[in-house]
Length: 131
Image (cartoon, rainbow, N blue to C red; front, side, top):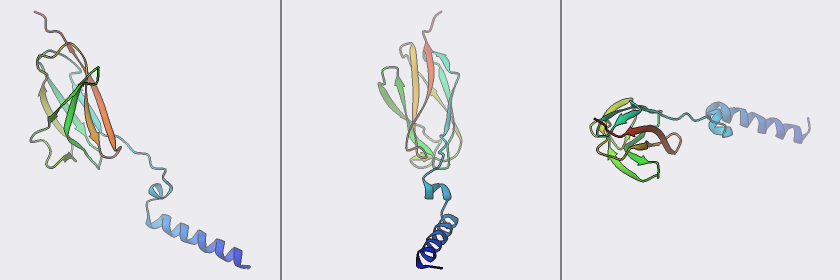
């Protein structure tokens, strides 16, 4: 065996050992990240009705604060009080939120997903309250 072959075998052995001790996906950069699942029920409500927010966070969690935004991306925040411990939610949760006397239209909830390192959105519609 010449020196080039020995060096090649040594490098390959080091790479195999590194992949065994490190997560292969992290090592190659080919990791498929899943997002947290966040739903709003019902997804069509009347003004001042309650919506129920259900979330199943990934292992890295979602933010405790969430934004409610309109179709023009005008947002305001609301904290999911008493549902999560620290600044993020790591376990599945449900929370009720009263929509208020907002204009009819499409809105969305925006939570920061720590696995994706970006915001995840779920949409709902508010219809005008009619008698």
